[in-house]
Image (cartoon, rainbow, N blue to C red; front, side, top):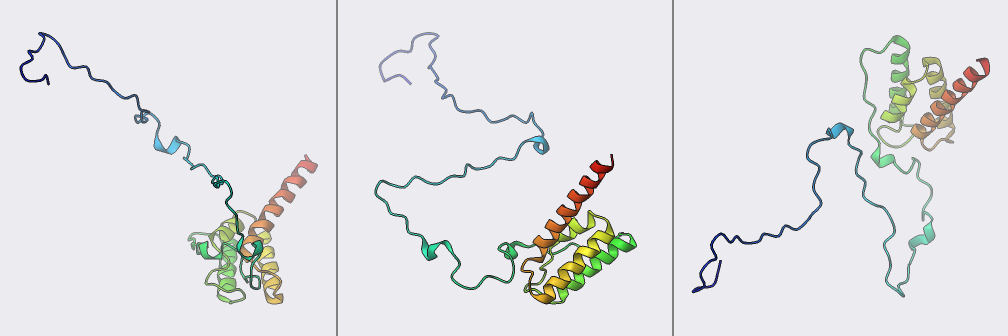
Length: 167
C-alpha cells in the first residue's frame, strides 16, 4: 500500500521476498524405504567452572537385582498357533518355566527368547531350556532371556563353523 496522497505507478507491483527455507520432501520416497531419523546423541556442554557430581559413585547401592536391567521393558511371549509338534514343545516348556517362579516377574523368558528358540532346531532349543531350568534351580542365572538369546547365537555360530569345515 502506498501512503495517502501518493499515486501508484502504473504497472508497478510490490516486491515479494521469499525466505529460502529447507524444503520438505514431497512424497517421492515411500515411507517404508526412508531411513529412520535419529536425534543426535551427545553430551551437553557444561558452563565453564561447573562441577559434575556423580551420585552413588556409579555403582548400585543395594544388592544386584535378580533379573537383568531391562526387566521392566520385557514383552510377554506371544503364543504362536500352527507350530509343529517339537516347536510346540519348546513353546510349552518356555511357558512352564515362566510360570515356575524360578525368577521374579511375570515373564522372565520374553518374546525375544521365544523367537530365538523357534529360530533354531527344536532339539537345540530344548537343550537350552533344560540348561536354563537347571541354572535357575541352582540360583546361578539372573537373566534367563539374555542367556537364551546368547546360547542361540552361539549355537548358530557353531553350526556355521561346522558347515565351513565340511565344505
